[in-house]
Amino acid sequence: MPVYEYRCKACQNKYSEILSIEESDDVPACPSCGSEDVQKLVSSVAVVRSAQDKAEDRSKALTDVDPNKPQEVAKHFRDHGSQFGEDDFRGTKEWHDAVDRVAEGGPTLDE
Ligand SMILES: [Zn+2]
Image (cartoon, rainbow, N blue to C red; front, side, top):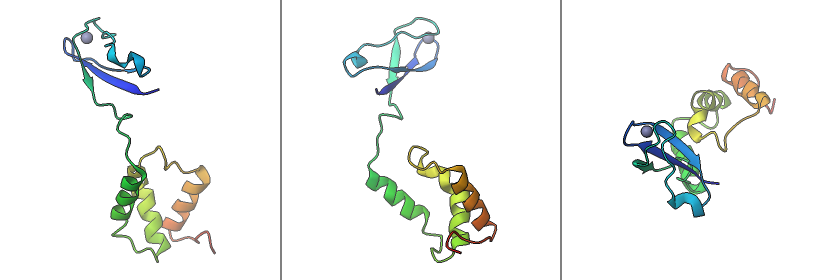
C-alpha cells in the first residue's frame, strides 16, 4: 500500500495516509482541524529509486576509500552506512560488530 503525505493549508499540519490506489484520488481531511483544503506532498515512499541509482551512489560514496584497506572500508561503512538507505542496508548486530572491530584495526572476517 502506498503512503501519501499531505499538508493542511489551514493549520500546516503534516500527516500521512495509507491509501489504496483507488482511494488515492480522495483527499483525507486533516486529522488536526478537519479541513479538506490540503496539499498532497510527494511521498518519500512513492519515490522509488532504481537499483542502479543506488549502486551509483554507492560507488560514488566509496571513491575516497581504498578497497584494499579493510579498515578504511569498515570505517566508511560505520560512518556513512546509513546514507545508503535503511531499506536495503540494515546490517545485523553481528555485522555492525564486525564493522566496528575492523574499523578499530581488528582482524577482518577473512583472518
Ligand atoms: Zn488542519
